[in-house]
Image (cartoon, rainbow, N blue to C red; front, top):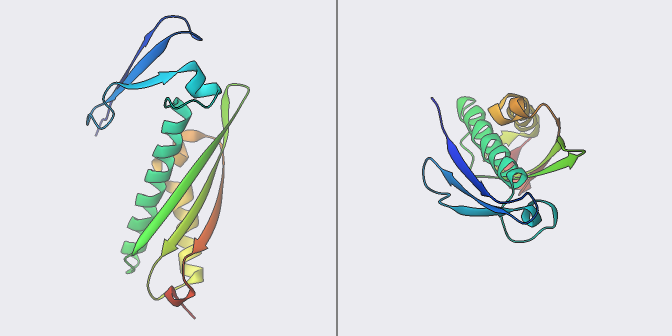
Length: 143
């Protein structure tokens, strides 16, 4: 399987601008700029896309592992925050909120750790990855 996106950049690094288009066209000529990357304006940044990819990839891998173990999650919400230092992504922090009926905390934690280590984006990052796992309701955890 191969997936692609295309980025076009016009002008200098600080004053220029670009557009990103994904293969699926979900991103279709989405603007990105220097200020979007470094000054927090509304334009998307490559790091934001990496954080999005990491959150989505982790959630899908976690769901897959839970399903294989016989537990279908009601919901997995993952927020990924990437840290960039000296031009390198050094860390990705995952905050995961999950609702899975009748699963033990031990099995839930074990599968979350496995998903963190095995999702393809985690493997590609080569950065420190942290994870905070939250269970939305204790009604979902069996003893």
